[in-house]
Length: 38
Image 1 (cartoon, helix red, strand yellow):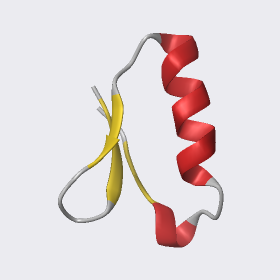
Image 2 (cartoon, rainbow, N blue to C red):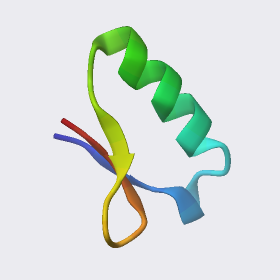
Image 3 (tube, rainbow, N blue to C red):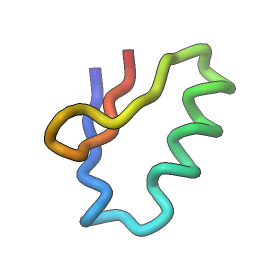
Image 4 (tube, helix red, strand yellow):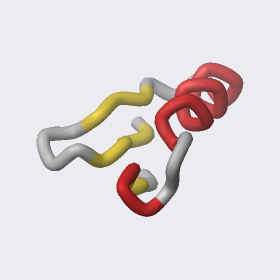
């Protein structure tokens, strides 16, 4: 599983949504405001 802090990567959410959909992952923010790949 990977985790990316959006505060360190502008545009990360949109990118990860696209990446997640392409790779078949479920992508969401976790409680600490990071993006998680499942």
